[in-house]
Image (tube, rainbow, N blue to C red):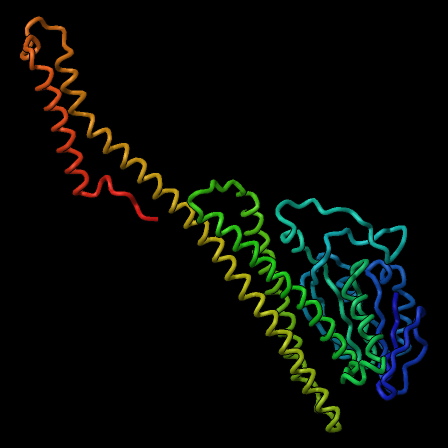
Length: 371
């Protein structure tokens, strides 16, 4: 568990290992814990929320935060808002039951290229109070560690010189963490694009024989899964944005400006998710089109082969008829006892070949199909 106290006035961040006993004079508290830690320390965390915020998490929301299979969604009460957002995971089991908060490393048994194995998600829960943010992460969450490091570095003199500002409220901090999660989906989108482009070039290359159909099927299933995940994310974030519109007006211009900045950041994250959804659907269509074009090309190639074989059969058919006629076991046949009979028959056969080939060539039965 990691606990941060963000002081708005002094622009400072204090990290502690224990639950806070009081709120700062100006600022808020961020309590970040793993899912197993939240399950083990549920009673102390609830008592801390009661002491700091005057309320606790309801039982249904506690169950949601402990559920590792919950899709992205948004819910609220009169005292706090709750957002569940699925992040990209590394394909590990939830936690080591003997050591709360420590991940149990176990390789994921999934087929396909490495980029498809990255489409594995775990939910991150956010409970947003007025001055407290409670986040519940998977074990060994890289997002929590990365943003905690960014938060601590934001207090340095160099960061202040560059205009880096600390989050102004728990809701602002939540949206920054969610934005970092969505950036992972944007990076995954680029890797998926390169993989799909490689498969398309292999499918449409007439000189190769494509046999990696299991990976293509896994890719289609993974893209469908990613589409559903992003749709849930978009719906949850849209509900969050709609709830912001119902908040009471701010008392001061500074507070109203923070509210407007929160709305802008929320809409920006929503726009990023919509970009991922649009790109995933386009890749699904591209994969389907590439497979259809591959089978169309194979069918066209088969038709060319059958047309060539049919033309050759038609050329040799009259020759087989002539040879079969003169191969009959009769004593008296025309031209078999003549010295020039063979040459007349051979010339007739050659003439038939030239005529048939000429007719087929004029009708483009023997023309080479351009690639």
